[in-house]
Length: 87
Image (tube, rainbow, N blue to C red):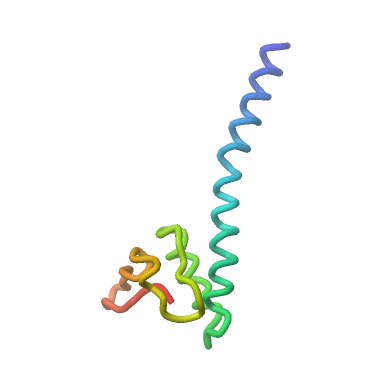
C-alpha cells in the first residue's frame, strides 16, 4: 500500500513538473503575440502565425511592427513562397 502511494505521489510530482513550463511558454507566447498583433488588420491570422513562430523561436520582437532584429529566428522564418512567415 505504501509503495503504491509513493508511486502515485512521484507520478503526480513529475507530471506537474513537466506541464508547468509548457503552460508558461504558451502563456508567454499568447501575451507577446497579443501585443504584437494589436494593430493588425487580420488579427486572427496574425495571432496564429505569431503563435507558431513564438513556439518555435521562443521569442517575439517588441512593438506591433518591425524590430525583428531582436529575434533572428523569428525574422528568418519563411513560408513556402519565400516570404516572411512571422508577422
